[in-house]
Structure formats: structure tokens, C-alpha cells
Length: 257
Image (cartoon, rainbow, N blue to C red):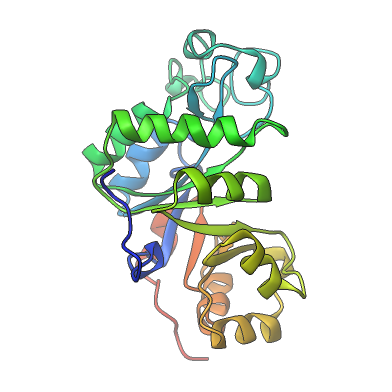
């Protein structure tokens, strides 16, 4: 598969300080082609997206467990086929301007990211119990569309990370958390994850500095203002996820206090 990292390098060696969260989701409906194109237009070289599966085990780009919030449909994502999902409008909920945006399959995503020269952080969002099937479907998508850029995998779900370690071992992994656990070293060792991604609301400077000193790369979500981004960069966080990449791209290096 193209895009895999070698045994010594990791995706973090290529990671930009600014990652477009679900694309430029402050400007366009999240996880759609429109949000990814907007992110690239605004200067992002990395985008974060969410991948789950349909009832017929096709990897699709979607965040929620149900389609209610971000489409004109109703019901659980896992209970709909890829064809049914393709028929939903994933843009009108955001703005009439984006009527007709569709739920992307992962093959659509990879094709578009290749076109836009976007590196990807794919967050694995499996239905509980379908972790292995989700990662397997991602593997099949990568076989169909070789990815020409850097790919980082992350998840809150440890079983998804176990499956990724087995079926997608060439790609760097990150453990997602909200608050950083005190036993963060053990959690990373257990999952085989290289990096740790945490929520900005749970910023604790002392523990972040310790993690940075240990050489563990960190990224933080979701950061939409300059001051918070600067605080995180100064503490040793390598990248932030943002809905508005243009706000941070020009100021993505730490500024002294």
C-alpha cells in the first residue's frame, strides 16, 4: 500500500501544526468533499475525518452513530447500506448552498485527498462490536485506492486500535482521549499507539510537559483561537485540530510569552 510509514519514521514526522477538523468544518458541512476542498483552499495540508461502516461493510466518512444531525435521513448509520447512504443529502442541514453534498465512501475520500494533496488523520469511529469489520473495510479501501500521502490513524476505541495494529500495521496510530489519563504511558503501550490526542478543555500544562519530555507526540482538539493554540504549542503539543484552519495557519509556531 502506498502511503505507509517505514519502521523508523512515523506520520508525526510529517504532521502540520494545523489540522482541518472534519475538513474546514467551520465553513462547510463536516466530513464532506466541500469541507475538504475548503480546507485545502484555505491552506491546510492535513485534514482529520471520521470513518465508520455501512450495514454492508463499506467504509464511509461520517462522525455520528446516526444520520439524523448531518443528513436529511433518519436512523442508525450501521443499519443503512452504502447505496442508501449515498442517496442522503449531507449538506442542506448546514446551508442551502451545500444542498446535494453526499456522504463519501473511503475510496471517494482517498481519491479526493490524492487530488488535493491532503495528508489525512482518519479517526476510526466503529459501532461497538464492529471494530474489526470497520478496520477491514478501511484496508479494502486502501487496496482499491492507493494513498499517495501520509496517513495517521486514531481512535477512542481501543479495540479499533488493536484491529488497526493487526490489519493496518504500516500506519502510525494515536490514542484519542478527552482528559489525559495518569497512566497514559501504559495506555499507549497497551494499544501500540505512537501519539496521544486530547481535548483542549482538559489542558494540564504539567502533564503535557512531561509527555513532551518523554518524546511522545501530542495533538489537541478542537482549537479555534490563536491564544489557546499558542498555549498548547508552547507546552509541547505538536498540532491542533481546528474548524477554521485559516485562523491558525499563519501563526502556527510558538510565540514567546
